Amino acid sequence: MLTENLITYTVAVTVLTLIPGADTMLVLRNALTRGRLAGVATAFGIGCGLFVQAILSGLGLAAIVVRSAELYHTVKLAGALYLIGLGGWTIITTWRQHAVPEFHLPTGQERHAFVEGVLSNVLNPKVAVFYLAFLPQFIDPRDPILTTALALTTIHFGLSVLWFSTLTVVVVGVSGWLRQAAVRRRLNYATGAVLAVLGMRMAVES
Image (cartoon, rainbow, N blue to C red; front, side, top):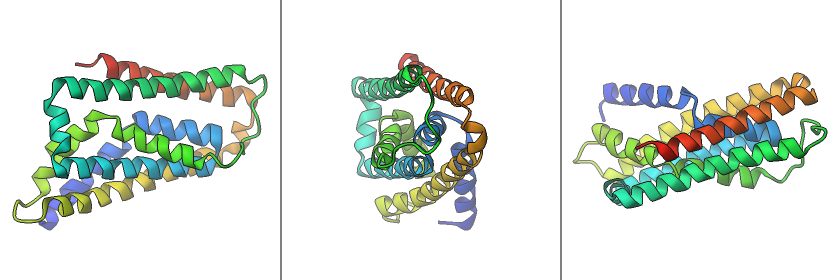
């Protein structure tokens, strides 16, 4: 791959990563409610979800999903319901708490946070569309397609993990402010509501 193409690709995925969306809200949610390790685990899960999509695209399976309207909408609906469920659960659990616990919540939830991060991308057909439409522009047909796709995805993975881990550290870094129960509740309500709205938007989009 030409250096110019690699730079163009890196800039493009950097911008894509920095744009706030469902992944950002999920990282904030888990960092706020579960702590630093859960936020970082979510970041790694999101990155691994990119690899899943890249492999599916390289094998041609993602193309089947995109071209089949019924299958595409099924995957999109599953992703929408997943985001709505996460948002709703965040709001409900926050409402049930009479007092918000200290910032360092029970440990051992990193695995759940990681899985949530993976599902956030695997159940989002827009990621599949992105890889199908975008990656081929940077792959030489003479090169091994799957190997090159995974190499490019590694760049996206690194940028994604770096950004979302940094976001987690920043959020946890203001823990003194976040220990205020009222503030924590408002933030939890906000992240839950945004996740639910993103899910509903995904469900109604054509």
